[in-house]
Length: 384
Image (cartoon, rainbow, N blue to C red; front, side):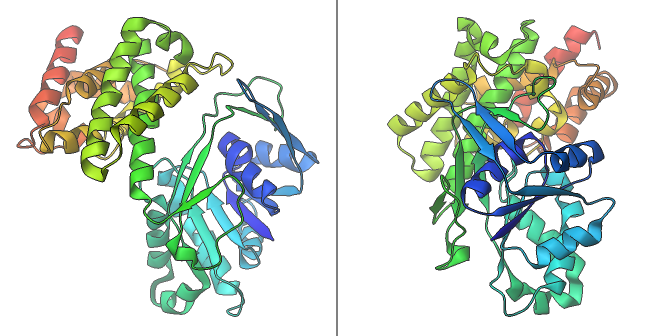
C-alpha cells in the first residue's frame, strides 16, 4: 500500500505521516521546500517525540520525498499508483495540489480501486474544497475521472509547536491526537489508519474541534500577547487570562450544544482536556506563533466570527468571543505580514468599513455592532 502526502512539514511528518506509517503505508511526501525534501531523502528514519504525560517516541521508516516544484511528473506517477492521498498544506494551497491529482487520476488504471483522498486541514470540509478545484481543472474530462477517486472530509487535531534547532527531520508533538474521518464515501473499504475514527456525520466533530481547539488556542495567544506574555502555557497560568479563554469556550460550547445537540457535560470535559493540553509546559509554544495571521483568524467562517455569528443569530451570549476579537485587534507583530496589514487597516479605515471588510459581516447582522465597538476601541487606543 502507498500513500502520497502533500506537505512534508511538522504536521505532515509528526501526525498524518506517522499514522499512515503505522497503517502499513509506504510514504511519499510531496513538498516545494527543497532543503526539507533533501533532508528527508538523506534520512533512513525519523523519530516523532511525544512530550508530556503519556508521551512516547515512535520511529518512522519507509518514506521518501519529492520536490513537486522541480519534479511534478514524479508526483503524478506516484499518485497514479497510490491507495491514499492526504494533505496538510493549508486550505489556500489546495489549488496548487489539485493539478497533480488530476494528472495522477488521468494515468490511473480504471480497474484499480478508487484513490482515497483526504485533506487534513484546519478548515471545514477542506476535502470538498480540494475536490472542487480538481473538478474545475478536469473540466469535461471529470466524468471519465470521477469514478477513480473518493473524497472524504476529515477533522484533525494535534498540537505541533515550533521545533527545536538541530532536530533534523525529527518532530516534537503532544501525546494527544484526534483524526475523525467521514465513513460513507468509502463504503466497505475504508483506509487503514490506526487511531483514526470513522463517523457518519463529521460536521459536529469538525466544529467541536475548530470552535474549541482553534478558538481556544488563538484566544490564549491574543490575550497572552496583549498581556505581554510569551508562552501559551504561561498565559494560561495567569488566572485572569485563563478565565477569559474559558469564558470564550463556554460560549462556543453553548452554540455546539444548541446546534448539534452535543451533551453539555461532555463538552465541559472536552474543554477541560483542551485547556490541559495548552498548559503542557513541555510544548514550547509561543503566543507569536499561534497568533500569526490574525486577518485570517478574524474572517467570516473562522474560529471567532464563525461561532460568534451563529451564536448571535440564536440569541446566545457572545461577549467573551468579542473580547477575544478585541485582543486579536491588538496583536502587533512586525514579523507577521497579516499583523502589519491589520494594524495599517485599523489606522486607514473607519470602524464600520474595517468590520465589514475583515469579518465579512453585514451591517445588519446582530454581531456587527459588537465587533464594530471593539474595533473603535482599538482605534481609540491607536489615536485614530
